[in-house]
Length: 159
Image 1: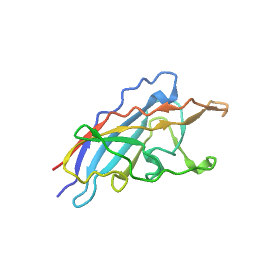
Image 2: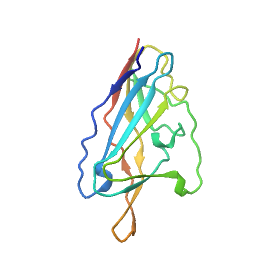
Image 3: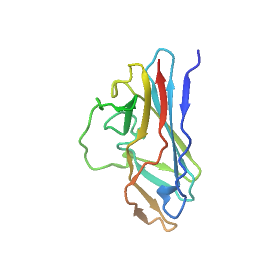
Image 4: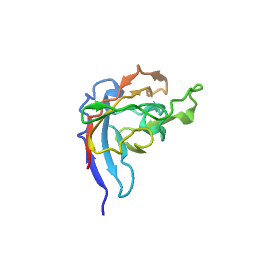
């Protein structure tokens, strides 16, 4: 049996002069047979500038280390049950680089960080902040102000 995939429409944030506004984010839920649902986040740089982003507190970190989404079951918020970590100063390996036109995807199992085993209608909303930098043509680095992720919510049902 094939996995079930639910996808929300991509963000329609403006690709104005702010390089972070040119990021397009989509969320999806994939439920492999016999497994817990997985959150899939896809990030696309629709802009014309390379963006360097801190992975921390986003799906691109590769693990639950903070409540980076909000989840509701039948309209009631769920409590995050995963770890919250204290950090050292960011290292170069804590960042990802997204070139113009490039897309990246990350997948995280929802459980055990979230109690999604009960039947119901679930809604997941992004709850993280992009922290980024850009370089100009002279390779000078500019740190951008933190920007909320704009990913349309995704919903799925557990029978």
